[in-house]
Image (cartoon, rainbow, N blue to C red; front, side, top):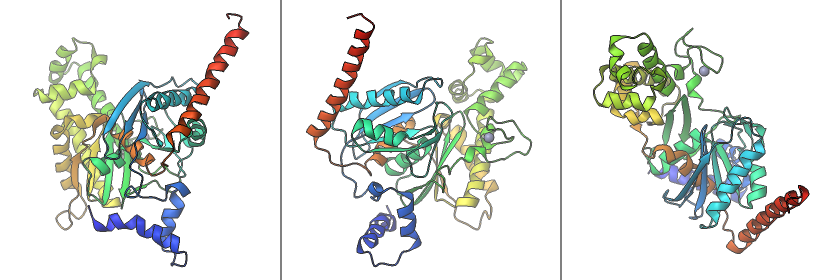
Length: 396
Ligand SMILES: [Zn+2]
């Protein structure tokens, strides 16, 4: 850990307290990008357990996480369908938190959502898997849960977790790249997530790498995630299998000719067993990964790239070719220090752990009795609502 980073935020806080200190750009940044309760670094945050929630396309995962990043308990449920109202998603989150708070002292709740979260981290601007359009999620949940709530993009929370407890420990300048169905990204500098003016920085997946290339659901062509992601991997494998290419006989055999059954994990498994086509496809993905990383190095110059997401399970079969391509495409190669490329260490729980840890920055030491009272009241309200509804329908 560098001394500079450790001191950076408390120093900014100190100058804010003394009042007469000159307003440096660093302090101005700190004050602009975080709310009043969040002017706190992870070093001074209370060492209390918090709940982290990861809302993905298919599942919602919630866990109680302590100050060392250890998961004390984890529960999960399915993500409500896209057609459901925002209230249904809210209910799901509240249910999970109340369930966990039966057995744990919960001091704050952090949410990592697959979607765009505004720079104040209170509204979800857009979520591709949910019916959220400019949804004031933080305030709605804080009102119902009676503890402080933090909302952030899931790639940001995953990057935070890797920086605090995983592959990026001790790095002052870190870029995280998440290879799932698409590409997610996040930038961390000096112990802060860089969110951009409008909160949507780090959408690396939609940088154009091939003019006029594959069409992307975002509306453009040739986006990076069309060449280096789980979807790209599966698309290429299915194309070869559908064309009945001799190189694909191995995988065609494995799925008994049923091409839609070809998935990313299956390709990784076959590559590990030495299937030449699957090894080659992962090399292609890795090569494109390296090209994109070289571009990001030109723009951001971090000391470390952490590669996470489902596709990173292929480990060296993917990251080896990425490192080679990175070295070949890095601008000024041979005349500059090279960033480290590391595989993420926290797996699919990174987003949840990071959300919980970021929530500690807004956590307060609640007295258990008071919180319990609020929870009990909310439960009672729901119970009487249900009772009233039942009486209304005449079944009681
Ligand atoms: Zn795109």
